[in-house]
Image 1 (cartoon, one colour):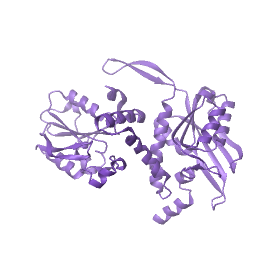
Image 2 (image 1 turned 60 degrees about the vertical axis):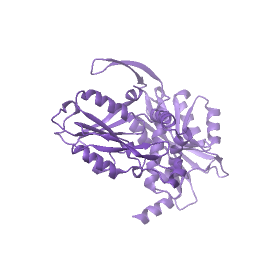
Image 3 (image 1 turned 180 degrees about the vertical axis):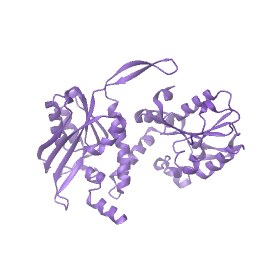
Image 4 (image 1 turned 90 degrees about the vertical axis):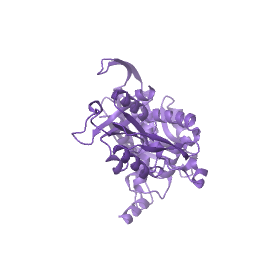
Length: 410
């Protein structure tokens, strides 16, 4: 029940206008394939169970993509904590295609059984699956391969809050799959490893930064106040849910600072976090605060554009890196001057230095700071160590090294 409450359908796409819905499938419509995908621990299995319940007398079989994990080699098993089980190469897609093709053709198949503790297949045992009226194929990447998608008559994507999914995954992987919490959280650290690598491509840097930013934004939204709300569902049932605050806005901090490189102005911009916020909050208003810096001590607020009613709103302040805290300090001062209560400001960033956190929290004790990782310290040049460089330049492709590499590739 928990999974069903936290998940919702974000897409219900028949492969063609003539494809029937699950309610229309009858015994004359043989071998109808429904694909169910979504993030890990989003509630796919629960959704599949509900579909099976609704189909009543129809013969239904459920096939999980997890059954088609490739067995790890001895070398891979030794470093299983570093293995990416969420990558398409982790699955034997050819065998999956073979099994699904036979099922859709009305033939029974032997589906492999995978041991998540040993990361290997059970070589001497299989699960026999007979052909049925409806075949449900579920998995995190069942929509990745065009050949697999082409087998589907209906596709459903299950979406759920990232924090809810992380909680479920930790519980599932530790209780059901014999893994420890550290190995689960290391997957988030893996994304940090990619974006911190100076040799990463621009596309990979943007992709994995966006994933981390989305996690930070969704976690920040969880700190907003809400009230209980009772609604009536289309079935006439009463559902007790929650209603989040409507008065909300984002404010991105744009910092520009002099540099001795060929690019005289370097930029670290909260604008890189705006897309994730818009994806989570439809139609949200977003303001700007531009701060010019000449070195770390010199700072000047040179532009701001904020909603006229910002004093009545909760504010999500966006800046990917918290270093000394000077810029965000000034941004918070401006918000307070505009009438925003301190306890209504949530500061969202990707990485933070302890010095910056200390300074902001000491001056503004009611501010909430949400970050994905706290780094070691600031160096003598006031840069976050180990850090990830000038985030805005790397994200928007204005970093000299990345730009040169991109142009060479083109």
